Length: 288
Length: 326
Image 1: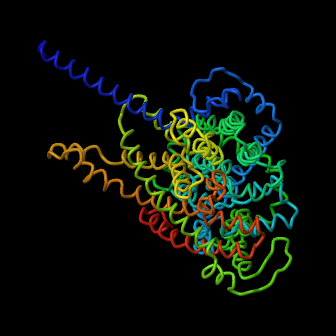
Image 2 (image 1 turned 90 degrees about the horizontal axis):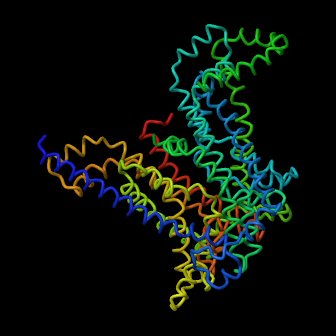
Image 3 (image 1 turned 180 degrees about the vertical axis):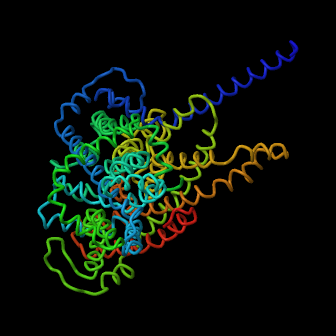
């Protein structure tokens, strides 16, 4: 390559990096504008009451104070609600995975009477919105004296048609030979399910677990109906009630600290499972 | 590696259950005498049983109960239950202007949710470049989507608060401008809720489109470039047809989700001003749990179920097109 050619090459490369930098800068600026309310939320949570009364629309956390955070972090109710959420969502997710994967194995691998009509019955559940069932479910828990318990928050939705559908599809794709070899060794169906099918299905099971957990954690309609005493609020409902109670405009700092407190566990959850969440969206939406 | 460990763990757990083997032996022998298909049926029912019980209690039976209750005048404490046939539906469809308004509002929200898909496409196009660090931006735009509705609703309710105590109005006041009563004006309140929904969920559309874009073979673009197609032509003739599937998927999903809007309205406006942001689900919730007219609220749920059923059938046919149906 001649010196002039190398010069040209360098020139082109320089222009390319400049373009990339401009592009990143542009996107970065837009992202900042898009997320401005979040920045404002964070800043507001560390500004004092007087400062907020003086000027609400400021992004400068000066004078800096942690008073709002002290109120939030010493509130035993918020911690209790966080605990409720953790218990409810974790139990719900584990139970759903267990119950649905067992059913999915039968539908995927066993040849039994009524298989097709039963599977159809399961698929019908995909079309039933929660609004079509929540009132009888509410009355059921009320009659059993289970209104305002964590159990009432955990149980509905465990038998998820979608989870069965998704896992049945996945189990069907696992080569039969693996099972047949185990069967030769005298392994029963349950053993095959646990030691062959489940370990080979970790991608779909983790994706399902993540989105079941998120969905249950963020659910709003059922908890607001089913949990009417502050003892059993989930953190999502608790935030709503607590900011409503403080409601008047005087407590923006506290409200925003409470909002961040509520969001933080899920943000941590997101960064732990980031890769699986991003790849799981395609799996979970049945589009891949 | 981790798969092996999981399998081994289960192996150990199963080992513990071996102690029940002598107890179960007679049953097992009986089971083995059955013809193969009957054998599998017994096994299958055992596998399905836990699911079947929960499914029956929390999905199948409640559907029938919902229909049953909707034919009654039914107050929540179980008092004053009276069969009234289709009177609830008659009142709903012919006289209940509040329900009609809620229905219209919901349809409006459904229509206002379509921009989410297009903005999502814009974001996907914007971020579909193999540049280092682009993942950070994808994360930023997606992150709101996994937040609870109360967090999102609280933030945006404070941003748009009507008095000078909202972020935007405080800013306008600082500039010496008139404040805008965002959440106190019917048309603006609807737009604010719709915008909040967009901000909240656009990241999902974006990721679906990004996945779709990455499925379009680069060779198609290269070939079009060779043929002299400009970037607009490439977008129209390669990108748009290539994204048809994610687009259809998002449309159906968006319609179903928007029909069920509840959280944003409850957190941000409480259905106001003057019931202008009251949606169907909000109306059901209000009638059932605030006015305790259970039968009447359930009749609304039945109508909503019918509407969603029609939409879901579209969705199922979509799944079938992709060859994942049974």
